Image (tube, rainbow, N blue to C red):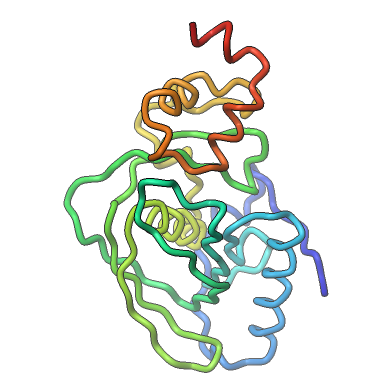
Length: 203
């Protein structure tokens, strides 16, 4: 098991477009994917792009755990998945803003416009091709991770930077959590619950 170092916002690797993987069955790709999974398990996070661990290849490892599914989303857990050379196709014209965090931008969260329904196509470690649809926060997660492969961080996708905030002061997030908690990722509900000044600012 190898725990990899996460690149932080400002490092040039996060602004570069990752290269296509020519041979998904290369054992080095499988080893990298295993190390990425180990890193996510160690941190307790959901998704990681190879560029975030200083490897400029189009690889994403992710999962959707039951503990991260909003109560009203209708989503089911997704097991650990390795996506090689993923390509996203939006299935809607409009976007919906969702709350996001990023391992490469620790301590912050923001509300990011994302397509609520997408199709994604990728290669597996065995060289096969998978294509399926995703919706809700699952679709947002996939868009977030695939953005990394194109050198894009989530603040670059935001259209309202007043909704970029420190995790210790989740004011706008708290307002939304109070109004419609069933639509909010449990991770973000936890941020709100741990905000010491919540009662003062929400009354």
